[in-house]
Image 1 (cartoon, rainbow, N blue to C red):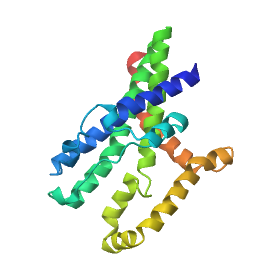
Image 2 (cartoon, rainbow, N blue to C red):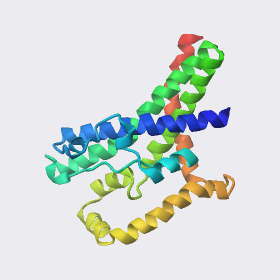
Image 3 (cartoon, helix red, strand yellow):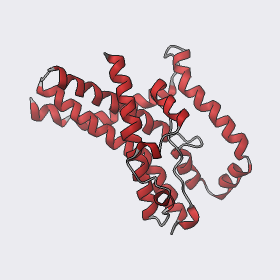
Image 4 (cartoon, helix red, strand yellow):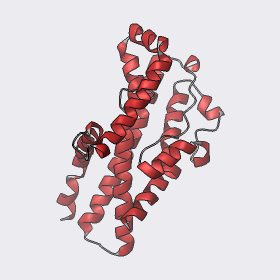
Length: 220
């Protein structure tokens, strides 16, 4: 049963959460003067406009993955530096907001003590969705290309770092792929003994769970 809800929640992530995240990022890009995503039909809740085959398989099998890159044209932005920063922050922020919503709804269900099968199913889906959103939001904040966190770092690091990155673009992106794979699987390989990404996700999850502290005071 737990396995079923895990995969069901990952399917919801693919067909609901990722379209929402990409659409919000597209709306932010449009607000900054770049309507490329809008023109290409990426501001939509239709999941087929966003799904990437390998990224979708990764989400279903591993709980993390990616969608098609959102088309961005900085030359159309009124202020490219501000636009890239806002778009980069929007992705993780959207995941965290959805995680908080799921956490709070799940805690309300938990405090109402209604353990009927339909309600229990909703509770399991919400908790799984919250976990996946925390995971994706935290991964996208990593300062490693092509994650949003790297775009934020590149934004603040200055011209020298920017020029160094684009001068060594291919090599840096190859290394970043290996670093990301190492972060994803080192916890499994070491049986949790060394798991910096897992520790970071757990910390963020704990911080976001503090938003539910009001619920027992109201419902008990």
